[in-house]
Image 1 (cartoon, rainbow, N blue to C red):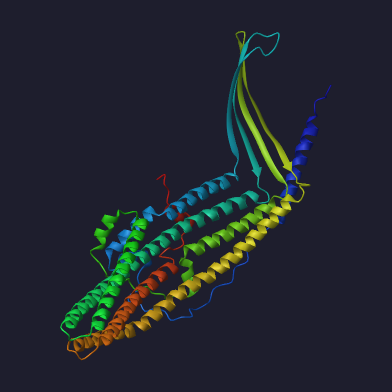
Image 2: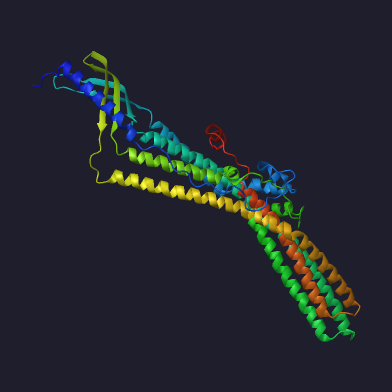
Length: 485
């Protein structure tokens, strides 16, 4: 027969357990600290000339500052229909759920239970009914910071997901603007091709009449007809390219093609002109505006927290449990009720041998952190490259603009002069065709240069972060999309 445990022994066991918990708490300093090494900083100054702006446009409202209101409408439609933005919104919800789970691991858990049964619980007793309801609580004491690190990692990934949502919106806006710009440039080239085809057709008509009258050789008439046919082929090809550009916008914006074509008629063949963006800050300050870099930085922080959590799993774990259960029993007209409760046990789990699993997990987490650090540093360098590439493109198009306009105007005047001489019989058809090809090529080059310059402004807008600015967690939570609201 077991003897009851003396009260003195019970108090001694409780004191021993408490001392063991305090001793384990003293080992908490063994847990690794989250002190990731900072990636190398970007260059301290820009290596290319900065564009002039008067005044600098605010990036958040940059699309509204184009001279084309249709562009802002198309961007809004594209952002609404974009699967990329929808995926980014889904990732925010998943990260938010993980953040809630990570925070909940730091506090106690509380579960409720209820039960009822009826039957003969003893051979000598009548049929009886038993019912009860209870609460069970459990709490893991986070001595070594494993749960805190998990919560920090989840919060960092939520912040990163919110930044990526903004980055997706910026990317869709820039892609839509680039497609719209390509369409307008295609329409401008189409207008030039239509004029060229009409001019070739008129030359072929006049040359044919002259050949029939004996004033031109039959070979000249054949050359003129061939030139007109070539002009018609180029015109058909250019129309197809513009139709493809329209269909690309239809796919991006999810607008009906007839409706989109009706809207596009207003500014046909007119390239949109953006506001001038000012870049006056050093790279380190400018790059703070990029949401993709914010995500890379938060991924680095999350990887550091994962490393802390993996290392902390190698240390002891302490958990505390308790429950309270009111019960009632009825049998043979006699009933009894009462409350059962307990605090404890305090359980200590000390890993001794696991075949190296925890050690391998800690090493893998460290490797992921090292990769995240390298990725962050590479993202910094790539961001500087994107900004400076856009600045180089702006500088190049600005320097070539005057020369291209002068060339186009000069070749146009030369073509008109040769055309007048040809009609007067003082120039050959070969001279006319050569002058025509040169003038058309110069006009096409000027249109392409204008498209390239606007595309460089769009690239600079995207490289500068599109107006996104880092916010504190409360502001980020409020700004993030929430489909439940």
